[in-house]
Figure 1 (cartoon, rainbow, N blue to C red):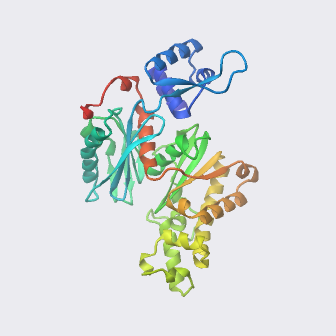
Figure 2 (figure 1 turned 135 degrees about the vertical axis):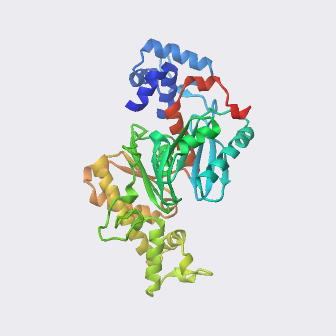
Length: 407
């Protein structure tokens, strides 16, 4: 909150109020006064100006029993548009959103080869076409989420083992190509920001998001603000050690969480057990090929009672639960949001992880921590990235100008 407030202090009362309503949702005039440090007179005058501009409106909270009805102030839906993009498996998901997190439209943009140049060119080429399609001039900023270690402060992708990229200045390259300020952040952090503000975590101020797919990444949110860390690495729980004698990770360490709890780890363990002769209904699937076995099939078989698949799920989820317990003891979040394909497709994975978390964390802390499944799919990364761009570059002038790409 303090970091965002410093930006607000520099940019004026209109920006301060718009940002507060965007990040924290509907608020009363009294709450805005307390949260922004603006005077009641300034709040009153500024709110009236924002209402006249069609950016803010009032909503009645409850029926009045006498006197003036209690009201909240909210942003007007679909008044303005922001853009964000999420990179996954040689495909961008580009989305347009309003300031309340509603998706206006989205498009998938494949590219080849897997190089920074090809990725940037594909995105830059499609954005003007996308703007014409939505027929609405967006605020001229862009947020992108990418897998890997990202220095958001400098727009630098330090490394991404998934893509084989290293020291790529994505922010400056896109800014040069588009002429827009561009913010780059880790894909899991971006997806978590969407859950924090608009999804499963919207009712909490302090939460942790954990995404479990082919890897495991996380985001830490305090007062709905993402914690980056010195180099942008806050949330790299996939590379925390959960078994000192565990398998070697590409990062060079042994026993990293993602080597034991992510989708590839589940696939490897199931293949090992099957090759050793363990019985499983997985053998009965049409066209079964051991080398092609996927985590989604293991999850489905586990939910149908397959013993081997349940064993694999329990092993993977137990390590995640241990990590969640450590997070509860270390950060004391109100909520942990589990996103990604594995939690969405495998209830037993989530149940086991939560059970282990509650067994291993301090009881008073774990009892007070709720666990929810994320609501957003792939669009969450684009939405979170767009929000981070607006957090960083919010200016009231955005609401009085048009994007040159839309002309």
